[in-house]
Length: 121
Image (cartoon, rainbow, N blue to C red):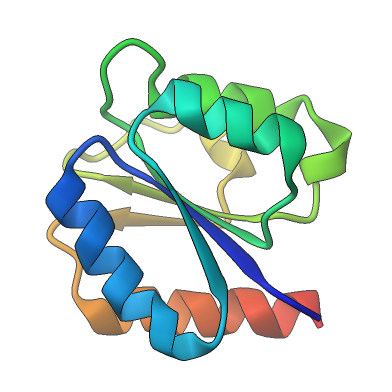
């Protein structure tokens, strides 16, 4: 099974870093630099894993999570919420399989990637 990872963050440096960490794992990577791009991709594709920054302008990570939560086709997608701030418990965050706080060590991303791939096999 081919695994597709969608990375969503408005910081270009972070997108490059996470892509570099993930690519050696033999998965395909798609990047979105904002929530609107992420929604456009999610309308067309079903990634195995979504790495989602919460704090983005215009269309936020929360908006993307809301879309994911009400889209049955995305029910099996492994969702990792990434934020610089602790998130209050909320229903849409319940859709997340994991929550990571910045700064994130590369090993954390790799471990979650392996968990997600193992779960989807």
